[in-house]
Length: 300
Image (cartoon, rainbow, N blue to C red; front, side, top):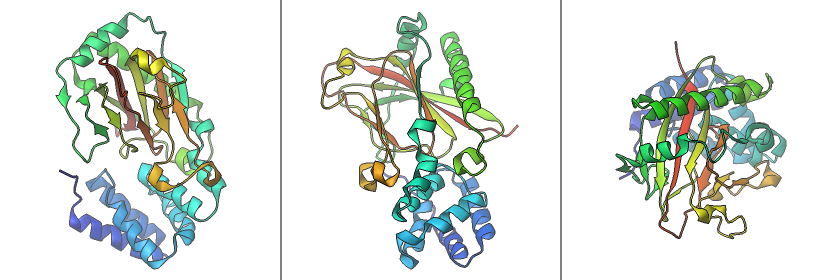
């Protein structure tokens, strides 16, 4: 089973690309925003990109994509495309403007590993799990419990209160930079949602980004001893933030990478256009338990 995009949306996306090529930037951005309101996954952007690259070499796309983003079509997939176009154009500085890990990636403890809520959360998240790994999702051979923000649980409410404060503090610390497409797209109000992920020896996440939020993160609840081996060559259970392998980009292109070792109580926060993945645990029968969460634009 694979995710599908409505054919008419793909055709509309191609029409938006045609408008952009004709210099009708505002019309192209407005059409893209209308399509996004119908399908927030923005998977249809591939049709948009295919038409552009059929007409022009990739090395010439950056000014067009930057104009489109500046005209209001700024979301995780368009920012990812913007950084790609910058790298194709040989402009790593422009790519790093939106992909700067030093500036935008935050890794910090929410609390210590002995926090009394951790075992309560592990028990809560391990119950009523669904096997959830369709091909079009990033999770492979793992368990996921959706919509934790809707669960009537005291320990989950405490967790969300703490995560919300930490995430909003992260947002407030971000600099003001009108020239930065990511920072300029900051929503005025945020909602918070989350889901639990339970991983065994075979579970991993393929490289992906979060297309319907502005910030996303992960909070580690339980981590098996195998993850604590900092010298393990295969980095079992670790999180990698950086370009997908099939992009072919490196630090020289403006795309850095960072490997993060999970620890109980640790929180990782990043822009939702940052691609990330995890390594399988590969051994042992213990589970890694975490909560993935998103800050999304909330209309009040």
